[in-house]
Image 1 (spheres, rainbow, N blue to C red):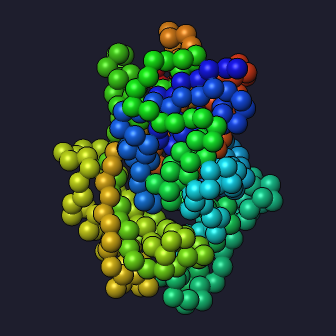
Image 2 (cartoon, rainbow, N blue to C red):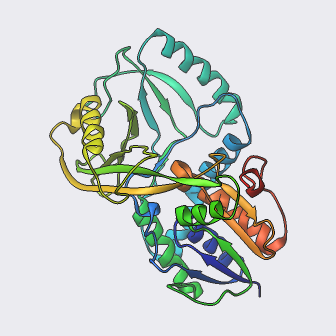
Length: 343
């Protein structure tokens, strides 16, 4: 039986642990701060695709992962009885003007080929329904690939799914077998300290949770913010992207601006009460893509880091390729995602 040690109990660490345990490996997960203690403990959870144009390995990897997500999270929920908050309900975006309309129509054509019939990107007429965002052109983009998840709940569901397989998150333990470092911002800082250039950095984000029941409706991207109708009857909105910050876990007036933008773009939220405010620092690799693979110069050690804003959407595919690499020696990591691209 292969032995795997996962250091870091965020979305990448827990997802890889789940994939390895499913294949029969003996897995331990180590995190001194507990599960989802960093940016994976957020509240937004927009699993939204890159635009269907200028196709590259990153977009293809994300497409695979988004299409894997429904089965991935269904298996997690079945195994442990938890609720991830996953739902593929699509996304609406307003179109500002004629130039935006022409661009959206071109992307609708390329989506037919690039998404291979698995989802659609189309221009639709606004109907004035309460949940629709304000659209100056009277048109909206509607894609059926976007999904949503509740990050905190999803990580808790993974922890519950791992327990029947004898996998628990512990604060410390000696390494056993291959070691995966999925340690987020702290890990990027550690790697940067050992190199002559920056490997990655943290980017602060702030988000809010509103008391408004829009469950079952599409997510929105309007006014520069993501609006996510969770299945528990709340709506998450976010988020900021701050390279410079003094208080990583505290919110400020920048979040107030995000809330105001969401209320202006979606009138249905105008009177919704703010019930939670969240701030956290997300790990961004130098290449901006997830950083995956063997740790150069450290035999038996591997890295999965740099999820930044797309970590939850990338997690099913990241889990698959890292389990392939650590358990079978099969390297299916695409160019642009490799650890060496950041070292």
